[in-house]
Length: 172
Image (cartoon, rainbow, N blue to C red; front, side, top):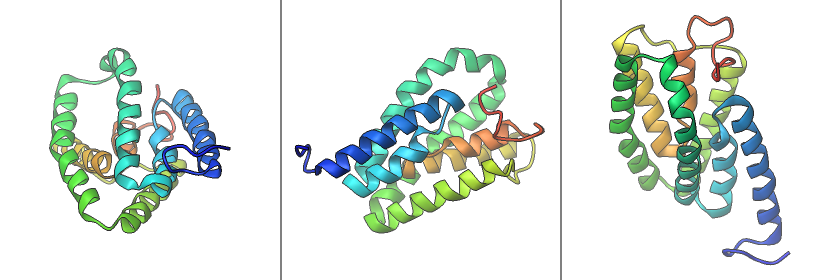
């Protein structure tokens, strides 16, 4: 297999397989492609490039979900979580740029494993209800978006509180 962007054939094949799996995950759950994609891309090309690619792909996919999602939230929640996330995204990206790339890759991977475990167990974030909890979820989501393009689980686990299995019903 030929080289592309300085990556050998094995890396290209791995990225293609993980990208396909990430697309399937996104298609079935409505979020989460970066949870699979960013750790692998981070190993192949460094965390800053991986996060940029993951964020761009998630942003494009999310734009298609916005109209139908607006019917499932309130303007207050959207404004609270959205503004909190907007403020925290640059802080997360600053942390990503300042940390050693190896440490960033490890932290992103550890966060993915921890959040996957929480979602698998059906747990929600221990945040208060109301504006304070929504602000906390927005900050966590924004920071993790800027740091690893993995900001979906905090907002999912907050938004689905009270469900039989929080986070398992993210797309409803």
